[in-house]
Length: 363
Image 1 (spheres, rainbow, N blue to C red):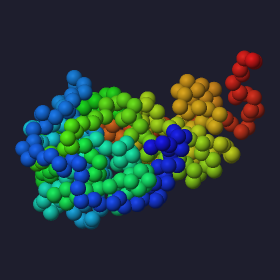
Image 2 (tube, rainbow, N blue to C red; image 1 turned 60 degrees about the horizontal axis):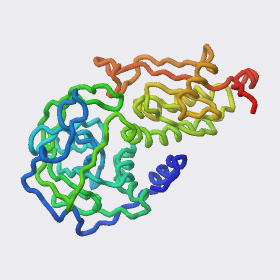
Image 3 (cartoon, one colour; image 1 turned 90 degrees about the horizontal axis):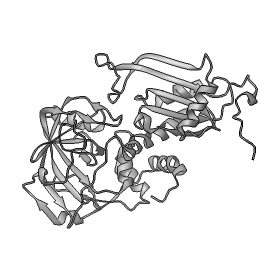
Image 4 (cartoon, rainbow, N blue to C red; image 1 turned 60 degrees about the vertical axis):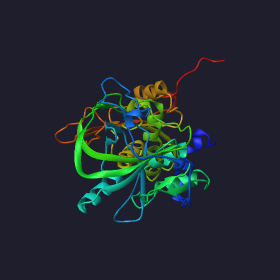
Protein backbone atom coordinates (compact mmCIF):
# COMPACT_ATOMS: atom_id res chain seq x y z
CA UNK A 1 0.00 0.00 0.00
CA UNK A 2 3.13 2.19 -0.12
CA UNK A 3 2.65 3.30 3.49
CA UNK A 4 5.41 3.47 6.10
CA UNK A 5 4.75 1.12 9.00
CA UNK A 6 4.58 3.95 11.54
CA UNK A 7 1.83 5.61 9.45
CA UNK A 8 -0.46 2.56 9.20
CA UNK A 9 -2.69 3.44 12.17
CA UNK A 10 -3.27 6.96 10.82
CA UNK A 11 -3.78 5.65 7.27
CA UNK A 12 -6.36 3.10 8.37
CA UNK A 13 -8.06 5.58 10.71
CA UNK A 14 -8.48 8.09 7.87
CA UNK A 15 -10.08 5.41 5.70
CA UNK A 16 -12.51 4.48 8.47
CA UNK A 17 -13.50 8.13 8.83
CA UNK A 18 -13.81 8.72 5.05
CA UNK A 19 -15.25 5.59 3.41
CA UNK A 20 -16.18 5.89 -0.26
CA UNK A 21 -18.49 3.55 -2.21
CA UNK A 22 -16.62 1.56 -4.88
CA UNK A 23 -17.60 1.75 -8.53
CA UNK A 24 -19.81 -1.10 -9.78
CA UNK A 25 -18.67 -2.56 -13.12
CA UNK A 26 -20.50 -4.94 -15.44
CA UNK A 27 -17.97 -7.74 -15.72
CA UNK A 28 -14.79 -9.18 -14.23
CA UNK A 29 -12.05 -11.55 -15.32
CA UNK A 30 -13.12 -14.25 -12.87
CA UNK A 31 -16.57 -14.45 -14.50
CA UNK A 32 -14.92 -15.87 -17.63
CA UNK A 33 -14.95 -19.44 -16.28
CA UNK A 34 -17.62 -21.17 -14.20
CA UNK A 35 -17.90 -24.60 -12.61
CA UNK A 36 -21.54 -25.51 -11.92
CA UNK A 37 -20.62 -28.80 -10.24
CA UNK A 38 -17.77 -27.83 -7.92
CA UNK A 39 -15.60 -30.30 -6.04
CA UNK A 40 -13.67 -28.43 -3.36
CA UNK A 41 -11.50 -31.49 -2.74
CA UNK A 42 -9.80 -30.72 -6.07
CA UNK A 43 -8.87 -27.21 -4.92
CA UNK A 44 -5.52 -26.48 -3.22
CA UNK A 45 -6.98 -26.19 0.27
CA UNK A 46 -4.47 -27.37 2.90
CA UNK A 47 -4.55 -29.14 6.19
CA UNK A 48 -2.14 -27.01 8.23
CA UNK A 49 -1.57 -29.05 11.39
CA UNK A 50 -1.95 -32.75 12.13
CA UNK A 51 -4.39 -31.87 14.93
CA UNK A 52 -6.75 -29.87 12.66
CA UNK A 53 -10.13 -31.43 11.94
CA UNK A 54 -9.42 -31.44 8.20
CA UNK A 55 -8.64 -29.19 5.26
CA UNK A 56 -9.31 -25.50 5.88
CA UNK A 57 -9.23 -22.36 3.84
CA UNK A 58 -8.38 -19.32 5.92
CA UNK A 59 -8.28 -16.34 3.55
CA UNK A 60 -11.70 -16.48 1.92
CA UNK A 61 -13.50 -13.14 2.09
CA UNK A 62 -17.10 -14.02 3.00
CA UNK A 63 -19.50 -11.44 1.58
CA UNK A 64 -23.19 -11.28 2.41
CA UNK A 65 -25.94 -8.68 2.21
CA UNK A 66 -28.15 -8.19 5.23
CA UNK A 67 -31.77 -9.16 4.50
CA UNK A 68 -33.00 -6.41 6.82
CA UNK A 69 -30.87 -3.67 5.17
CA UNK A 70 -28.97 -3.09 1.90
CA UNK A 71 -25.55 -3.10 3.60
CA UNK A 72 -22.97 -5.65 2.47
CA UNK A 73 -20.72 -7.25 5.06
CA UNK A 74 -17.23 -8.61 4.34
CA UNK A 75 -15.29 -10.71 6.86
CA UNK A 76 -12.81 -13.57 7.02
CA UNK A 77 -13.60 -16.85 8.74
CA UNK A 78 -11.82 -20.17 8.73
CA UNK A 79 -13.80 -22.79 6.84
CA UNK A 80 -13.56 -26.57 7.12
CA UNK A 81 -14.32 -28.66 4.03
CA UNK A 82 -17.04 -31.17 5.02
CA UNK A 83 -18.09 -32.49 1.59
CA UNK A 84 -17.31 -31.88 -2.08
CA UNK A 85 -19.38 -28.69 -2.09
CA UNK A 86 -19.97 -27.82 1.57
CA UNK A 87 -18.01 -26.12 4.32
CA UNK A 88 -18.63 -25.06 7.88
CA UNK A 89 -17.25 -21.80 9.22
CA UNK A 90 -16.40 -20.49 12.67
CA UNK A 91 -18.83 -17.57 13.07
CA UNK A 92 -18.36 -15.21 16.02
CA UNK A 93 -21.30 -13.08 17.23
CA UNK A 94 -20.73 -10.09 14.96
CA UNK A 95 -22.05 -8.93 11.59
CA UNK A 96 -22.13 -12.22 9.66
CA UNK A 97 -23.70 -13.92 12.69
CA UNK A 98 -26.41 -11.22 12.64
CA UNK A 99 -27.08 -11.68 8.92
CA UNK A 100 -27.40 -15.46 9.34
CA UNK A 101 -29.75 -15.00 12.31
CA UNK A 102 -32.01 -12.63 10.35
CA UNK A 103 -32.18 -15.05 7.40
CA UNK A 104 -33.03 -17.97 9.69
CA UNK A 105 -35.71 -15.92 11.45
CA UNK A 106 -37.33 -15.58 8.01
CA UNK A 107 -36.82 -19.28 7.27
CA UNK A 108 -34.48 -18.43 4.39
CA UNK A 109 -31.01 -19.42 3.23
CA UNK A 110 -28.55 -16.52 3.18
CA UNK A 111 -26.95 -15.81 -0.23
CA UNK A 112 -23.16 -15.67 0.01
CA UNK A 113 -20.01 -15.10 -2.03
CA UNK A 114 -16.47 -16.07 -0.98
CA UNK A 115 -13.60 -14.36 -2.79
CA UNK A 116 -9.91 -15.35 -2.97
CA UNK A 117 -6.78 -13.68 -4.33
CA UNK A 118 -7.50 -10.14 -3.17
CA UNK A 119 -5.40 -7.04 -2.60
CA UNK A 120 -4.06 -6.85 1.00
CA UNK A 121 -5.97 -3.59 1.55
CA UNK A 122 -9.23 -5.49 1.01
CA UNK A 123 -8.26 -8.16 3.52
CA UNK A 124 -7.14 -5.49 6.03
CA UNK A 125 -10.42 -3.56 5.70
CA UNK A 126 -12.42 -6.76 6.22
CA UNK A 127 -10.38 -7.55 9.34
CA UNK A 128 -10.88 -4.11 10.91
CA UNK A 129 -13.77 -3.57 13.35
CA UNK A 130 -16.55 -1.34 11.98
CA UNK A 131 -20.16 -0.57 12.71
CA UNK A 132 -22.65 -3.01 11.17
CA UNK A 133 -24.02 -0.14 9.08
CA UNK A 134 -20.68 0.38 7.29
CA UNK A 135 -19.73 -1.70 4.24
CA UNK A 136 -16.08 -2.68 4.76
CA UNK A 137 -15.41 -2.40 1.02
CA UNK A 138 -16.04 1.35 1.24
CA UNK A 139 -13.07 1.45 3.64
CA UNK A 140 -11.00 -0.75 1.31
CA UNK A 141 -11.80 1.60 -1.57
CA UNK A 142 -10.41 4.56 0.37
CA UNK A 143 -7.29 2.56 1.29
CA UNK A 144 -6.82 1.89 -2.44
CA UNK A 145 -7.22 5.57 -3.37
CA UNK A 146 -10.69 4.91 -4.84
CA UNK A 147 -9.46 2.25 -7.30
CA UNK A 148 -11.55 -0.66 -5.99
CA UNK A 149 -14.26 -1.88 -8.34
CA UNK A 150 -17.04 -4.38 -7.64
CA UNK A 151 -19.17 -6.61 -9.82
CA UNK A 152 -22.60 -8.01 -9.00
CA UNK A 153 -22.82 -11.80 -8.86
CA UNK A 154 -25.88 -13.66 -10.22
CA UNK A 155 -27.14 -14.01 -6.61
CA UNK A 156 -26.94 -10.23 -6.13
CA UNK A 157 -23.79 -10.08 -3.95
CA UNK A 158 -21.20 -7.41 -4.83
CA UNK A 159 -17.66 -8.81 -5.08
CA UNK A 160 -14.26 -7.11 -5.70
CA UNK A 161 -13.73 -7.35 -9.46
CA UNK A 162 -10.02 -8.13 -9.16
CA UNK A 163 -10.63 -11.44 -7.32
CA UNK A 164 -8.96 -14.57 -8.68
CA UNK A 165 -11.61 -17.08 -7.58
CA UNK A 166 -15.15 -16.58 -6.26
CA UNK A 167 -17.42 -19.20 -4.68
CA UNK A 168 -21.16 -18.54 -4.89
CA UNK A 169 -23.69 -20.25 -2.66
CA UNK A 170 -25.76 -19.96 0.51
CA UNK A 171 -25.56 -20.38 4.25
CA UNK A 172 -28.03 -23.23 4.70
CA UNK A 173 -30.83 -22.30 7.09
CA UNK A 174 -30.98 -23.99 10.49
CA UNK A 175 -28.30 -26.56 9.76
CA UNK A 176 -25.30 -27.01 12.07
CA UNK A 177 -22.39 -29.44 12.04
CA UNK A 178 -19.27 -29.95 14.14
CA UNK A 179 -16.39 -27.55 13.37
CA UNK A 180 -12.90 -27.98 14.81
CA UNK A 181 -10.51 -28.54 16.38
CA UNK A 182 -8.27 -26.00 14.65
CA UNK A 183 -4.93 -24.43 15.59
CA UNK A 184 -5.77 -20.72 15.92
CA UNK A 185 -3.82 -17.51 16.72
CA UNK A 186 -2.41 -18.64 20.06
CA UNK A 187 -0.85 -21.72 18.45
CA UNK A 188 -3.15 -23.91 20.57
CA UNK A 189 -6.18 -25.93 19.55
CA UNK A 190 -9.40 -23.94 19.45
CA UNK A 191 -12.52 -25.63 20.69
CA UNK A 192 -14.98 -27.85 18.82
CA UNK A 193 -18.35 -26.16 18.21
CA UNK A 194 -21.55 -26.53 16.22
CA UNK A 195 -21.42 -24.07 13.31
CA UNK A 196 -23.51 -23.21 10.19
CA UNK A 197 -23.15 -25.05 6.88
CA UNK A 198 -22.23 -23.20 3.68
CA UNK A 199 -23.19 -24.82 0.37
CA UNK A 200 -21.08 -23.87 -2.66
CA UNK A 201 -23.22 -23.96 -5.82
CA UNK A 202 -20.81 -22.45 -8.35
CA UNK A 203 -17.14 -21.53 -8.62
CA UNK A 204 -15.98 -18.69 -10.87
CA UNK A 205 -12.29 -18.26 -11.73
CA UNK A 206 -9.80 -16.43 -13.91
CA UNK A 207 -7.60 -18.20 -16.44
CA UNK A 208 -4.60 -19.60 -14.52
CA UNK A 209 -6.22 -18.50 -11.25
CA UNK A 210 -4.35 -18.86 -7.98
CA UNK A 211 -5.78 -19.71 -4.60
CA UNK A 212 -4.56 -17.84 -1.53
CA UNK A 213 -4.22 -18.78 2.12
CA UNK A 214 -3.18 -17.36 5.48
CA UNK A 215 -0.93 -19.54 7.63
CA UNK A 216 -2.62 -19.78 11.06
CA UNK A 217 -0.78 -18.58 14.18
CA UNK A 218 1.94 -16.89 12.14
CA UNK A 219 2.85 -13.27 11.31
CA UNK A 220 0.19 -12.44 8.70
CA UNK A 221 -2.49 -13.86 10.98
CA UNK A 222 -1.24 -11.75 13.91
CA UNK A 223 -1.20 -8.56 11.81
CA UNK A 224 -4.74 -9.03 10.51
CA UNK A 225 -6.03 -9.80 14.00
CA UNK A 226 -4.26 -6.89 15.65
CA UNK A 227 -3.67 -3.95 13.33
CA UNK A 228 -7.23 -2.64 13.25
CA UNK A 229 -7.58 -3.11 17.02
CA UNK A 230 -4.34 -1.22 17.66
CA UNK A 231 -5.76 1.93 16.10
CA UNK A 232 -9.00 1.53 18.03
CA UNK A 233 -7.13 1.12 21.33
CA UNK A 234 -4.95 4.14 20.52
CA UNK A 235 -8.04 6.31 20.01
CA UNK A 236 -9.63 5.16 23.28
CA UNK A 237 -6.45 5.73 25.29
CA UNK A 238 -6.00 9.18 23.71
CA UNK A 239 -9.29 10.18 25.34
CA UNK A 240 -7.80 9.77 28.82
CA UNK A 241 -4.05 10.38 28.29
CA UNK A 242 -3.11 13.44 26.23
CA UNK A 243 -0.20 11.83 24.39
CA UNK A 244 -0.19 8.23 23.13
CA UNK A 245 2.90 7.30 21.17
CA UNK A 246 2.03 3.82 19.95
CA UNK A 247 0.05 0.62 20.52
CA UNK A 248 1.19 -2.90 19.67
CA UNK A 249 -0.54 -6.27 19.93
CA UNK A 250 2.47 -8.62 19.92
CA UNK A 251 2.74 -12.16 18.51
CA UNK A 252 3.05 -13.53 22.06
CA UNK A 253 -0.68 -12.80 22.46
CA UNK A 254 -1.58 -13.86 18.94
CA UNK A 255 -2.06 -10.22 17.96
CA UNK A 256 -5.21 -10.37 20.08
CA UNK A 257 -4.89 -10.99 23.83
CA UNK A 258 -2.05 -8.65 24.89
CA UNK A 259 -1.68 -4.92 24.22
CA UNK A 260 1.44 -2.84 24.87
CA UNK A 261 0.78 0.90 25.03
CA UNK A 262 3.41 3.66 25.20
CA UNK A 263 2.34 7.03 26.60
CA UNK A 264 3.76 10.38 27.65
CA UNK A 265 2.85 10.41 31.33
CA UNK A 266 1.83 13.82 32.68
CA UNK A 267 0.15 12.98 35.96
CA UNK A 268 0.35 10.04 38.35
CA UNK A 269 -2.40 7.61 37.42
CA UNK A 270 -2.15 8.13 33.64
CA UNK A 271 -0.81 4.62 33.24
CA UNK A 272 -3.75 3.07 35.03
CA UNK A 273 -6.26 5.18 33.09
CA UNK A 274 -4.59 3.96 29.90
CA UNK A 275 -5.01 0.36 31.04
CA UNK A 276 -8.74 0.77 31.64
CA UNK A 277 -9.23 2.56 28.31
CA UNK A 278 -7.45 -0.26 26.46
CA UNK A 279 -9.69 -2.88 28.05
CA UNK A 280 -12.74 -0.81 27.10
CA UNK A 281 -11.55 -0.54 23.49
CA UNK A 282 -10.98 -4.25 22.95
CA UNK A 283 -13.07 -6.58 25.11
CA UNK A 284 -11.00 -9.66 24.22
CA UNK A 285 -7.82 -8.25 25.76
CA UNK A 286 -6.47 -10.31 28.63
CA UNK A 287 -3.31 -8.35 29.43
CA UNK A 288 -2.34 -4.68 29.02
CA UNK A 289 1.15 -3.32 29.64
CA UNK A 290 1.65 0.45 29.66
CA UNK A 291 5.17 1.89 29.29
CA UNK A 292 6.82 5.27 28.82
CA UNK A 293 7.78 6.77 25.48
CA UNK A 294 11.43 5.78 25.85
CA UNK A 295 10.54 2.07 25.64
CA UNK A 296 10.46 0.38 22.23
CA UNK A 297 7.19 -1.54 22.43
CA UNK A 298 8.18 -3.78 19.51
CA UNK A 299 11.21 -5.02 21.48
CA UNK A 300 10.04 -7.69 23.95
CA UNK A 301 13.28 -7.52 25.96
CA UNK A 302 12.94 -3.75 26.33
CA UNK A 303 9.31 -4.08 27.48
CA UNK A 304 10.23 -6.80 29.97
CA UNK A 305 13.07 -4.63 31.32
CA UNK A 306 10.63 -1.76 31.91
CA UNK A 307 8.21 -4.14 33.61
CA UNK A 308 10.86 -5.45 35.98
CA UNK A 309 12.48 -2.10 36.82
CA UNK A 310 9.50 0.28 36.86
CA UNK A 311 6.58 -1.66 38.34
CA UNK A 312 5.95 -0.94 42.01
CA UNK A 313 3.73 -2.58 44.58
CA UNK A 314 0.65 -0.59 43.50
CA UNK A 315 1.14 -0.91 39.75
CA UNK A 316 -0.63 -4.18 38.97
CA UNK A 317 -4.39 -4.22 38.33
CA UNK A 318 -6.19 -7.57 38.58
CA UNK A 319 -9.79 -7.85 37.42
CA UNK A 320 -11.30 -11.24 38.20
CA UNK A 321 -14.17 -12.94 36.37
CA UNK A 322 -14.23 -10.50 33.46
CA UNK A 323 -15.55 -11.41 30.04
CA UNK A 324 -12.99 -13.64 28.34
CA UNK A 325 -12.05 -14.32 24.74
CA UNK A 326 -13.09 -17.53 23.03
CA UNK A 327 -9.53 -17.69 21.67
CA UNK A 328 -8.04 -17.83 25.18
CA UNK A 329 -7.33 -21.48 26.05
CA UNK A 330 -7.39 -20.60 29.77
CA UNK A 331 -10.91 -19.13 29.73
CA UNK A 332 -13.43 -20.60 32.18
CA UNK A 333 -15.64 -22.68 29.89
CA UNK A 334 -18.65 -22.56 32.18
CA UNK A 335 -18.78 -18.83 32.92
CA UNK A 336 -16.94 -17.66 29.76
CA UNK A 337 -14.82 -15.41 32.00
CA UNK A 338 -11.18 -15.02 32.86
CA UNK A 339 -8.82 -12.69 34.70
CA UNK A 340 -7.68 -9.42 33.13
CA UNK A 341 -4.32 -8.01 34.19
CA UNK A 342 -3.00 -4.48 33.75
CA UNK A 343 0.66 -3.62 34.28
CA UNK A 344 1.57 0.03 34.80
CA UNK A 345 5.25 -0.02 33.86
CA UNK A 346 5.58 3.75 33.67
CA UNK A 347 8.02 5.72 35.82
CA UNK A 348 6.64 7.22 39.00
CA UNK A 349 6.69 11.01 38.90
CA UNK A 350 7.63 11.00 42.62
CA UNK A 351 11.00 9.32 42.12
CA UNK A 352 14.15 10.86 40.62
CA UNK A 353 14.34 10.32 36.86
CA UNK A 354 17.86 8.92 37.21
CA UNK A 355 16.60 6.03 39.32
CA UNK A 356 14.95 4.60 36.17
CA UNK A 357 17.63 5.43 33.63
CA UNK A 358 19.41 2.53 31.95
CA UNK A 359 23.11 3.28 32.11
CA UNK A 360 24.98 2.74 28.86
CA UNK A 361 28.67 2.08 28.33
CA UNK A 362 30.25 5.36 27.19
CA UNK A 363 31.41 5.51 23.58
